[in-house]
Image (cartoon, rainbow, N blue to C red; front, side, top):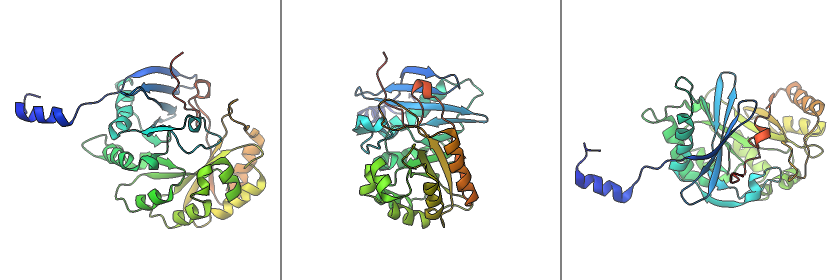
Length: 299
């Protein structure tokens, strides 16, 4: 950068560097989903997933190496937590994936739903979000960015006071405390009833809603009673429900419900006045679907 003085360049080189990511491996599923495996400078690995869907091209980002929360239906949780990603490592996933796209193809949506819990890496995640929407940086619309969290209450309360705006998704997955604690041990610390109470008072933009993600697990949380209870506990919260049939894996002690059970669950929610969408699983054949990210080394 010859437009800067030599002394200033020396000072900059002592306190900063330009980082980048390089994919160790890129896999593509038949449905067009791509999974990127990145090795970080310290040897740790993360994954990002690019998901095509009609007019959308969504990039699913990781915010941590591994995850400490240990949700029983998620393979990432089996890795445990290794470290938080730096802001640059979160954003470099976008930059690197963008370089692989044809000139006239752009990423339209960003979801922070990859490896890790975004709010457990609060400061770096918020810095990354601010740059994603900044007009001099990535220029994404805040309405096209979604942060998914299990509901870490202190961070959610802090988030409610932030000026930056984006779409919020809560990983719910159960309608009572006992079942949610079984599926998601974090519920013992931050119980369902307190999360819902905070959601009822969470400041939202006009016409905005909180998305509640609900992974359907056969015989655990997919009964008609669960559906009716979900209608009741979400009453008073501007919301929509994303139903995600479990992605089966031999290492997970659960099974996906039948298509009929999923359809009946959805219909019950809709009859009760909720917007309920069944999310089609994509990238399962390359372990890129929800709950499958493990960042394995190439074979």
